[in-house]
Image 1 (tube, helix red, strand yellow):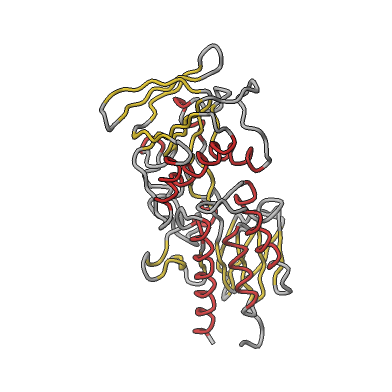
Image 2: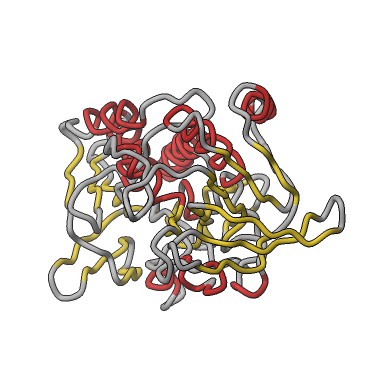
Length: 345
């Protein structure tokens, strides 16, 4: 295929980076995968079940981790790339003063970070003991911890709040995070399995269910698991003397204000652009779109291409995606890199 294998740096060791790296390694390229955390796997290592089939995410992570043992892949962890620059025909990547390496091409797979729910003070996260985020709940379920209030009691009523940090101009995020609605449905079902006597309410703006099987899961949540859906946005939550919570909302279908006492609130936090995106855009290596994600060359025909020739991207650094979409997009990015080098031969 080539006399000297090209060297490609993949920035980010989540599932997009792992999949991209393994596909390119199988095609004969030398890969350096750089991950800022101690281990690879990204957010998926913190999740309990995947929608829509409740499968174990550890299976996905294990498969991708095994592929990283390929002889063409070098993995560097606990290292964050802080600068990218063009140095002649190569790209130079730096991690502060600790590391510097050259690459023939770069694939950015830096992912996303979760919205900080404490920014929505009216919801009480970080103030009230029994207000959790969807990420908190997911980790509890992954670790097989019983779902209990801060005082150790089984909750009798739980409110799940959609669109926390998404579709919210006050929070600075006007876009939809795409997976929150189905995550809320999945978590409501899992809660019912663990707490069959508990009433579970989902407060939503409107349900955006993108997958072909997601509407079926929504109906299953209502019919089999007795999850109740209320179209209305939470305005505020208050803690009562017994540490239970009172929420105020508006039922937008009936046009009436609503008050409800609950034992626990789950906030479905959305995706925000990865903090490291600013490092890559600072010197013009790549550009950001209007939402702060990496800007692609062409949203239809070149989604994995950044505005800088030789720098590619994959996964949720582009926009919110599900797990399956992320893996598909990573394979697409790998193909774009292969095509790029074949055109240069």
